[in-house]
Structures are given as structure tokens and as C-alpha cells.
Amino acid sequence: MKQIQPYKHQVKYYECDRMGVTHHSNYIRFMEEARIYWMDELGYGFERMEAEGVVSPVVSLSINYKRTTTFKDVIEIEVLVDEMSDLKISFKYTMKVGGKLVCTATSTHCFIEAGKPVPLATRFPELYRAIVDTCVR
Image 1 (cartoon, one colour):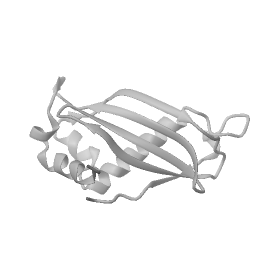
Image 2: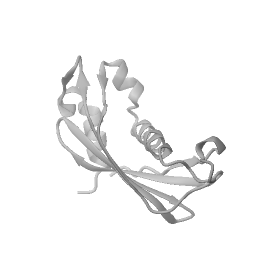
Image 3: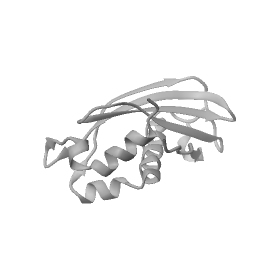
């Protein structure tokens, strides 16, 4: 099983609202940054998949905020595969600052080529195997 280290994001000043806390909408971007990092760490980045004609849009999203974060906080984001099928993948995100839980989230994505669903295991067997190798079974 391949172990991928958490992604780290330092909160920028512009990501904070007038109260000085990270605006809730930014966590979706942080999740995307972490997911892109995760794919790159697998050795199969989004650029490669998209260059081969496949996109992976978000199908659903769920976020639970536990604590606020502020300017210059470093958020460590662990990305794990929650569920996977031929056509969809769900990621689970755990976000912490200084070891304290600040947010949990999930996102589900499908795989589309030329406007139609495409099975990941068939279209990208190398990526599919790399993902399976990161999963705890």
C-alpha cells in the first residue's frame, strides 16, 4: 500500500473574511489542491488524464466545519479514497491545524470522455491500480 503524506496549505490573507477567519468557501479549493497533489503523488496527474481526453467533475460534496482557521495557519489535509466503483470515486478529507481537527469533507467524482461516462479500470488501468494500492482494505 502506497502512503501519501498530507497536503499542506498555508491560509492566505485574502482567503479570510472580515472576521479574520478563513471563509468557508475556500475549503472546497483546499480540497481540490489536496486532490491534485494526491494524484500527482500517485504519478498520474490530472494533466495526463485530461490530455488523454478524460475529465473528472464533482458529482457531490459534503463539508463539516469543526474549528475556524485564520491567516497563516497551516492546514494539513489528508486525502483517502472513501469509495470507488468503475465510474465513480469518493474522497475523504481530514483537515487539521497543529493536530486539531478543523474540517472533514467528502467529494465524489465521475469520469467522463467525450461527454459519456467511462470506466476508470478499463480506460486507465495504471491509474486504477495505483488508486487501489492506496486503499486500506
